[in-house]
Image (cartoon, rainbow, N blue to C red; front, side, top):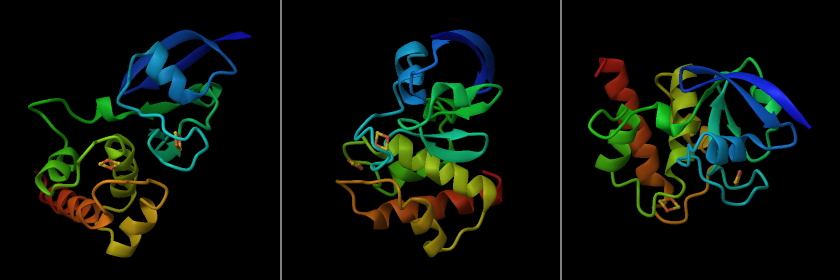
Length: 158
Ligand code: FES
Ligand code: FES
């Protein structure tokens, strides 16, 4: 059944007719063309589809689009753009934490949700926050370093 969805995505309020059975990941990618959110497993296991919903990192392949009602959603497109990257995006590049890039948007959204709650996380806390995000290329050390570096930059206000 089609329903009217009222939601805010990347700071923009919108009212859109949606299929209430659609998953949030498909709504973002197919309806809003926000294809930075990736789809891997569709089972909540890889984390590629992670977005921030009301301040929490969620695997959007498992979330009904109707959970977005009156909610605030952030995707990788809302963080920064070429030439004006978010410190997390910069740090991932600088620390070599990106190879194929498939996991990167989800990884960065999980890291963003963490840093929003905990600006100075320990290694253990970073590992825990990113434990639902699988990377097949880089290993996790560089990713962890990138998150620590971004945390330091954000704390300095850069
Ligand atoms: S596609 Fe959503 S967790 Fe893998
Ligand atoms: S950079 Fe390829 S899966 Fe992480």
